[in-house]
Length: 182
Image (cartoon, rainbow, N blue to C red; front, side, top):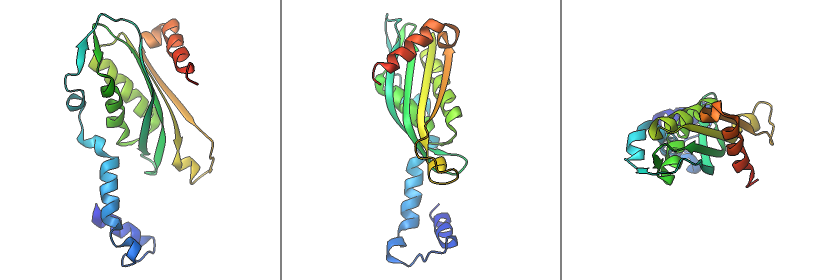
């Protein structure tokens, strides 16, 4: 990856011998390895059996999970928040594991629509929940820094599975809980 970054920088017309750029190919390679570390993580490793028995069948909501990803079209960042809700059926997932699942998929080249669905489907599969809702709100640098250059646009996507899709009251409760903080 370091060699590829060197070629990209040279193709831009820059001089890799310039003091500020001497180590940039290596730093950029390390940065992109970090930003795409989700390719080297599995859900099983991250969840690590952090499912705990619970009698609760009430909605669990984790709001404002910070999210950093790279769009697969321009390899530019999109940054935002992810909100996750689920209804347990005999077991709950460790709180930090929800944020880690978000990170696994966010730290890959993505489009926001797919990211939202992947998170929802994974939490549904891992927890065997009665329903899952995921909403992502993000700002995309590919729209802000280039192209139409719209600085205040926010993209919102949702994925509703199980009772969150089938039952309007469940979906409304989830959306209502999210509004309590806004």
